Length: 64
Image (cartoon, rainbow, N blue to C red; front, side, top):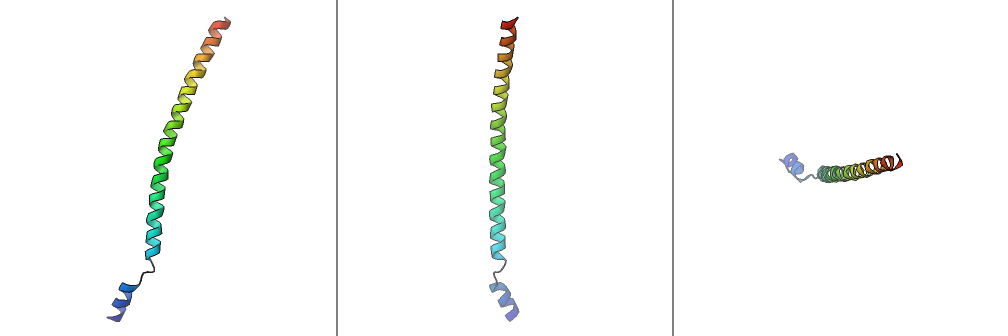
């Protein structure tokens, strides 16, 4: 009975579980941030590509 009582009072692994959960939440939050950031950067490059293409077309049309 004393072994069971000592086992129930022991909390050595509690910190490891808490830090693991915290690390998991941080990983999920950073993954969500990187996904949305990647989409935003992709749209910036897409807009820049369109502007460069139109500027090149205008330069070719005006120089001919």
